[in-house]
Length: 109
Image 1 (tube, rainbow, N blue to C red):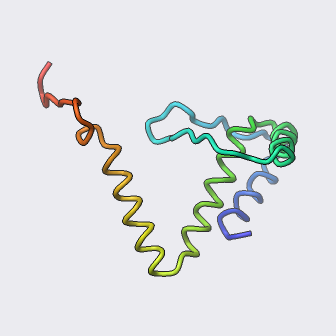
Image 2 (cartoon, rainbow, N blue to C red):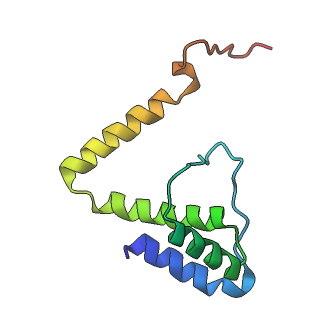
């Protein structure tokens, strides 16, 4: 495991008796992702969530976020530069002001 994933797993196991904090699924800083997961891993995730007193969606999100962070940290320089450029392009494309038909009226009512 990478450092972030290892820390996340340690944190999850140390808080087992207290349950996981509720995860935020409505904030503008959260993006819901639909992704395939093998049937066995999906059942394992559900079982882990049950014993950790969490939802499988929130637990899966926490684990995936840590794994993505670890992967990002391990990218070599050419690939990291390419990933940063792709990240910025995706981020820019998602801004409301870049979507055709969206208008802003600053200070208007």
